Image (tube, rainbow, N blue to C red; front, side, top):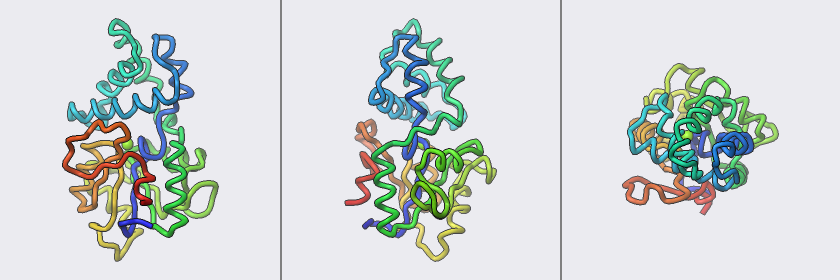
Length: 225
Ligand SMILES: [Mg+2]
């Protein structure tokens, strides 16, 4: 079912995206393309820009500017559109389930692969993933996972490898090098996973990181092969 003894996942960009059904109308005012596919693409373009800048988790300015540029907002409106995006893209908006990810997560879970979520979040991520029917600890509407670790709750954030210790407590006896950690941030996720001795995998649907030396996948479904 999997090359790995367990799969741990980032939430934003892997399981859910900032809700394009909210951001579409918000940014269309500034001339942005409003289609869901365009917004999906914009997220990964924006993450790549954020990574290229070496931006820290709290600094989303490059992300917001690259996001609206990816949607063809004209240069004279990039400041205003990206500022609006930065104010509206609150933690609770990371709630739009990525359809292929939800399907792949369900297949991994039903195939017996032990799963966990480790997210830099604001205390909301476990509830959001439940409400979005993506996953939950124990039985429920989504895929059962062993734990959902929220940086705000545990008090340590990626790329600090210490955040992964909270998940590891649910995986006693599993060799960390046989645990994949899938994320969409080079600095936070790949960097954090390397520091934690996990096997890092970047989700890179549009080949924004074609020159990377670490493993990349286009979709979570690639883990099922
Ligand atoms: Mg992410």
